[in-house]
Length: 162
Image (cartoon, rainbow, N blue to C red; front, side, top):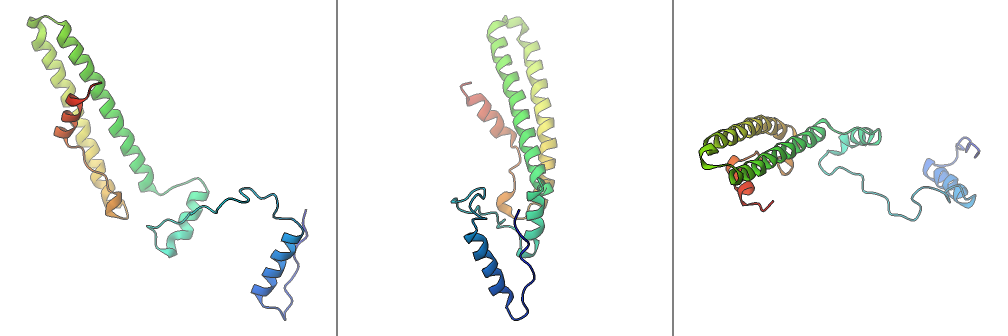
């Protein structure tokens, strides 16, 4: 265990005394086994925060927490991916059933597919409401999320080769 550095002599300036203590510690090898030695220091600054709020951000991050809007954004991304996955799975089922079913049962199948689309559209509306609220919270426009545009979702789905 290392010794406490002691008190600063009154005739020394703080900067000089601190530099002296650092040099002594280096000479004693106290910095030789530090984690990450030889690696560049990580850039941990958040470019979107004013300097006055950087300390609070650092404390949150270092304690394993994050800003609420970041967590909210991750949740929205997860909801979008889950909704798309369900729609994709249902569409693949619908296409397979269309090929398998006789013509006289296609009407029932189309009703099921309409129901699946309706479910997706309702979930997309809920997600879009969350996105609009999220976009009001983020600190810059470049971090905003795009709302789900149904026509684009269906176009992507129908043109995929999955």
